[in-house]
Length: 375
Image (cartoon, rainbow, N blue to C red):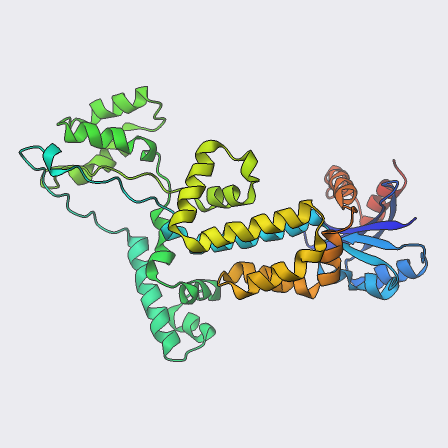
């Protein structure tokens, strides 16, 4: 046996963990032990000096691989590297959530303006959750500027530390409230039709409800009534809605997808977004360079890529890059060598199936026998 695959799995609702070892050449399960610390792995490796390659994810629990087999090359799994990069991209896009919306359509020229101008729509009342987030953001920043720690701010404002970190880390209140403002509503896809018909003088909610039903609206009439209520007597004409902003996950997916595999519509949206936001443009370039490095097996470019990202202002991506330095040799090998942890992931999926079959009726010892003694 030359190459060994290592991965852990949750046992008993994630409260208990085990580790499985796989022969990467034959995909045969070699060993399964309780826990996921490095001592058991180091002990097993000392008895198997023929192991020269160890495929694993980047968990710190596999330090025993270096102790038990110092002669072996560590190879970080490319799937986990790409997944970790995707998490950093999503965090970066989330910080830019308020900038994802495209600018509203240009106003009608004065030559096309009707002789009777419609009333100006009064701004609708701000959502309670949005008002509360703005107040919390202002209070947290005021205390932070006074030198108070995040833990102390949390105690004073009665907020969880994760909420305080989000508030203090946000450059403006708009970055915090954007998620609440962007929440999708069942009426959203039909707002354009509703507002157009409203401005044409059709104020009967039941009639408008029937019209959008024919367009595929799946909701009820009450939601339509609630949406139109803000434009009733004294509220004026309904505004022409701008394009609905893409979600954070949509933008993350566009950035993480090979340009040749993007739909033309999505590619155009990403192009316009990159033109509007230079930071997201740089983020996309960094991701594509990493993808080219990973698929082309150019691990020799890793140092330059990390340096470029660390010099940029994209904090989540810089954090991902710094973590790569902590496991640099394994990551570089993962981006250079042909070894993959695919066989390990396949065995983990099979192991999970066996675990579910025995849930609540078996111990780890029985699971070990079923894993190791069956093909």
